Amino acid sequence: MKQREDAARGAQARDGLARVLAALADPASVDAFLDDLCTPAEIEALADRWSVVPLLAEGMSYRQIHDETGVSVTTVGRIARCLDAGAGGYRAALEHRDEHPAGLPTA
Image (tube, rainbow, N blue to C red):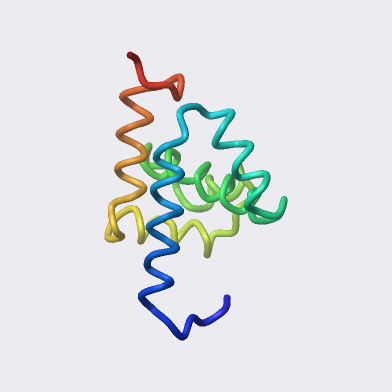
């Protein structure tokens, strides 16, 4: 990953990315944005990480998650640490998913 010399510009870029993701209205728009923004490998890595989160929340063991998803036990452990003591993003996403199981907010 590249190192930014200007931390403020990096924070501004990250804020802009978060805002545009939050502003996209439907899963198809987010998917199209991700296709344009990320490489196929980056999208696969993001999808793999997200697929682990609900399984951890259900209490599945790291080994079972690895066997089901193919995600390394080391990565599962990293995700578990973030789920337990991270910035709260995984928890917020889980809550949103539970509130809107189809992925679409109700009007």
